[in-house]
Image (cartoon, rainbow, N blue to C red; front, side, top):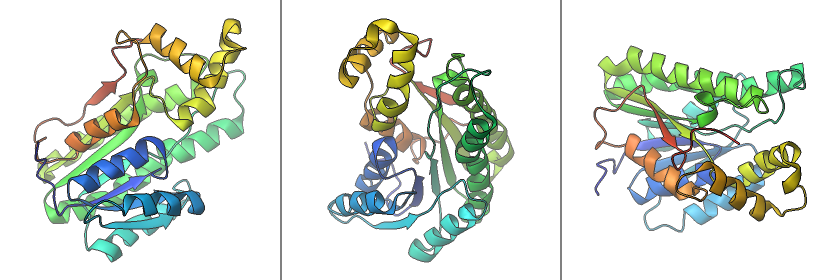
Length: 268
């Protein structure tokens, strides 16, 4: 399927691994010039070297922590400097935190809010004027099915996911007239490094019978329980959704949270 976005310019945050990397790879394969952003410069450079192996790939990099107040302007400015414009923004930066309301600290809340919700608001606000100038834009915000089906053991992450869904809907209504479509992807059990590092420990704490299993065994068992399809999703499957939402082929879907969950109606 020709997505009709060859020659467009994109930013993908949290792009050094997992879903962010897969999204960057998918956009590059469709002829998009991509600025990849992540905090860890060494991992980012390694990822960008791999991405540049794609024939005709146009890749720029920026090591930045999007939770920092000035990062949004730096990131947008880098895309304009490298490629001359901006049409697509994929907000993928973030991490999960296990714990309920009573066990989560103020630091947990501030850190997670900064890296997930506040950074997303800043990135969207900095990107929209350039999309308005172009008369075309697509924004994809990575969320969680926990924003719809919350689990109290992931209190901070799921409260913020609900806020991301609301941010997405509100912004979509505001900028639709400008040719800008804004959507979120509600991610469920998707086998990534981040999921293994954050969700697997939470599952072990919640489920004593999983305490002696390997990470892969925990992911396989919990995914089989949660998803009607009986397995975890892959980063490439999420990336395919993000690419469609970012494309010319999508001219009507906006303000929605598309679930990538294998049919799950709960999280953990």
